[in-house]
Length: 206
Image (tube, rainbow, N blue to C red):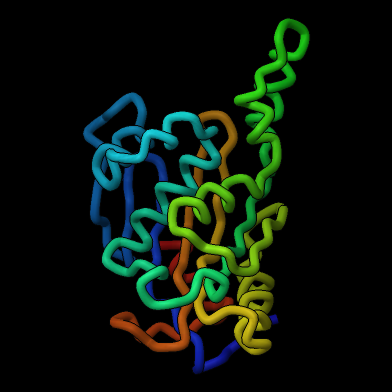
């Protein structure tokens, strides 16, 4: 199902792929071969959030993507905390952390890892950072189902559940990661990109 609604717009987008970042479709940063690409991104875009270092890799990816997505566009400056939603999805849930936690159980189970054995913890980390309290969900799909996400998020707007929403795909397993996050609002912003499954897919594929 393709949803088209001219009253909601993608006002910012970011993709994080191995060794490169694109903001609003344009490459804005490229790795110089750093061994830890996500740490290099943290140093480039954040660099002053000690709790980052305690996160699992999935949370780091989603948290960093949101930091880049919301540069110069902080929802807390425009909306009430309960009016900003976060709707994310991936294909492997928190399996990477689950497996690492299981490996500790035979010795001394790690509470630090156990905290991250649910995929929606990445939403919690984003919410804490940006003081957001709106509707949130984390879905598991074989691949990024842009039509479903667009329909689901648009329903939240149509029911006045949210006034803005961060949505997208945050996949991480082992050394593989694929992040794509989008800010959706009722005003067109500088991008003037209508929010629907097709535009989500096009921006994700860039």
